Image 1 (cartoon, rainbow, N blue to C red):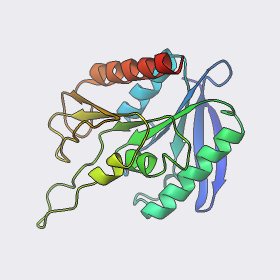
Image 2 (cartoon, one colour; image 1 turned 120 degrees about the horizontal axis):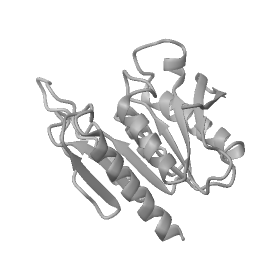
Image 3 (tube, helix red, strand yellow; image 1 turned 90 degrees about the vertical axis):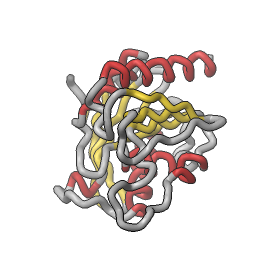
Length: 207
């Protein structure tokens, strides 16, 4: 699928945004990647296609550490600052005037949640939210407070056997359980269906 590549300077290096269907859309989805994978991972691509099918513009965002060729993620504050800068740039340019749903896969979902207020998002899409890190000798703290802090409608698409656990639904939060683990590769059709249904519901409520 053709996309327009946009380079964005952030406080922590150059990010990239892969833009799709900018022009006649009435809203947009801005989606980030996981810690070790890029925007070409199967579930972000599946979410992209689902959003495009619902008439949204889509921007898939690569964090500066990925653009620079580093495998290890930057610290959370740097990730958040870079994300806010990219979303702000998109708001002032190709996605100007469009209501934005933000989100991401795993690490990208955490970033989107933490910055939802700062980016003025109307919704948050979380693919495989990493609730509790698995395989540790000491219990790790839950990341549920990051989800609970989001005040706009949120969709979490989570594999039923995800070793990071299953987030609970909440007042503004829908949790779609699909077959598979943290990769979400087992049933991409179910991932697409969950994303499309939720985006359609958001559009109906805005209309």
